[in-house]
Amino acid sequence: MSHKLPKQVWLFTLCYALMLSGTSMLVLIAGIIGSQIAPSEQLATLPIALAIVGLALNAIPASFLMSRYGRKRIFLSYAVVGILSALIASYALMAESFALFCVAATGVGAGAAAVQQYRFAAMELVPTDTIPKAASTILLGGILAAFIGPEMSLLGKNLLSVEYAGSFILLAALYCVGFLLLTRTQNSVAHAPDGKLIGRPLKEIFSQQTVIIAVLAAAVGYGVMAFIMTATPLSMHNHFGHSLTHTKWVIQSHVAAMYLPSLISGLLVERLGHYRMMAFGLVAFLICLIIAYTSQTFAAFWLALVLLGIGWNFLFVAGTSLLPTAYRPQERFKVQAFNDLLVFGTQALASLSSGWLLFQFKWQGILIMSTVPVFIIAGILAFTLFNRRVASDT
Image (cartoon, rainbow, N blue to C red):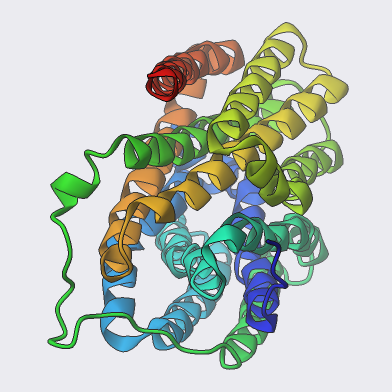
């Protein structure tokens, strides 16, 4: 049975769009800024990587703080972190301090740790059979973020005397709007009467086949996507000579492709099932890698990055909506916390290594390395589907 989504889900979707814009901004310009002010070209993509490290390191603290103080209060607190980080980034560029810019990027990522919890807050507002629809709806906010962040990058590029310093002032203003909207969201807190999280041990929960494949789908989706996406602006603009406008369009199209399928991916999960959706996501990844390896034209970059975004969406929506089926209500905060640690920790490692590996092995080397996790999860998924078929036949 299909259920109409509550207004709060749409409010979280709008907040997701605004509060995630800083991430799409960093994806476009942080590597370019790094190539200008970093002490070494090998460190150019470090700010992007540190943003994801900030996200990963805050996954567990954010979730456990929410279990104690409620989601709303922590959402607002992390929004303040984002505002301050955007202002620090602007000052860092004015002061030509790469170290301070890295600190600011880490802060933007830390704020995004709370943003990633919006999807769980939304899923808790709907019945079980509507969870995939709620999860995919939240991700629709990423479509707006895909355009708002990069557009603000260019709009604010020459706003102040130092390039891009004005971009982060605009980002801080946008975060303020997001903060005001978050004050309209409802609070939720789910801990036991004695204030302690109860339920099964994490080892028992994460040993379930359903949890393993759910986490792997999201982690590999994010890892491969981040690995390639982090290297793309620098490769396109600096190594292959594409214009910043073309580079911006590819990144915008990629981020839009990450979230636009959410219009239908929730319904597709309901129709096809979680595992088939994961399989389609892996196929999109493989086609992306083939196109990107064989051609480095603007059209090839655009098509490859669009497919990369679609593959990520299918894997992430399928994994995210599968996870709540395998834990109990009282276990949700700790499971969500460790899930995000694993998912965004993988993304952080991918982003941290991407810049250095790009410098060492170039664009084609990045693509070859990306095939390894894709084939690994494809094998695990095939094994899981085989076991399920055997079980259903017996």
